[in-house]
Length: 412
Image (cartoon, rainbow, N blue to C red; front, side):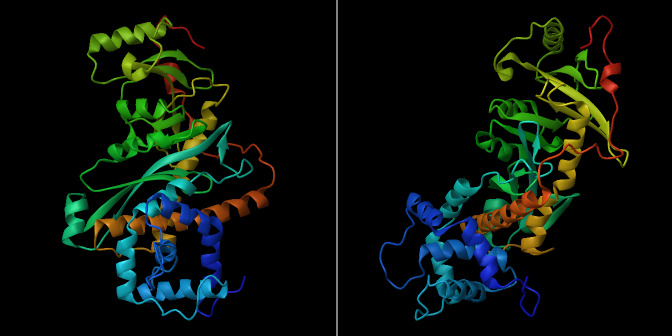
């Protein structure tokens, strides 16, 4: 593949990947939906160009405003989509055009195009009938403006206050393609769980959602489970999971109960579950839910406890679930790609106002989605038909729960 003399991919190829994945028609629909379409030909930079400019800031993070806009204009001109007689965009004009655009069209566009892209033939894309996705989070630095500080606040890490405002981004990422399919942007005053709850309505009923302990909580579990998505979440150490039945694969059926319930109420729910009389319906109203639990050991010797809504071992054996969770942890490098491949290590956002920060982040998400879709299609074509992958050496289901069954409780 031909590269420029400095080793970069040609601008037309980088921009072409984005334009192919996110066509002008989709951009125009988002602009129309948010009321930001061009109203007249007045010489100002057109809104559609500024949408692609937001993505261009991600593609060319080392370029200043005029450099990024120039790359877009040159490429669009070569495609016959831009009149080369128009004046070149200036930094001041670009700043004004960004403000006129706002972040809403980028958010609308992302919501429309951010769909899973991995084909069933891509290794690790599915577990049985369920598409593997996962919750993730990252903090991004922004310029130290009064507006950004007021909106997002400073972060705290290991007791040290950050030198710059930090934007909190919580995402649902497709495991195989590493593309973000849902995202929420917030400040340091909002917890990861608060932001993640806003993503629940966007979960697919045929997804398997993996999450770590940062997202685990009774209301969070209930909210995500109500969507119909299957859950595979890591449980904090010491969280009570009373077992009611052991499974032959080393997992067990257990009761996940609201920790705010009194001890007697929880005990009554466990007894009801053991007798097959746990109240049906919404677990949030019942106060408890039957789940399947397992514990596995990673190749590095770490012990991990998981809870899942997939209660049938035949649909997803414990070893398969353990492998899926472990591979998700490895594939979380998708977040590192978003931070590193597009932004580069240590690079902060450019925008000095909260609205422009959000616009810039959605530009990154859209550019990353376009690249991830291309990579996923290439992997699918190279991989051929899906095959059963043997468990990774070193992952071991411990079967701890099968040894913790109370006397008198039957096994399944």
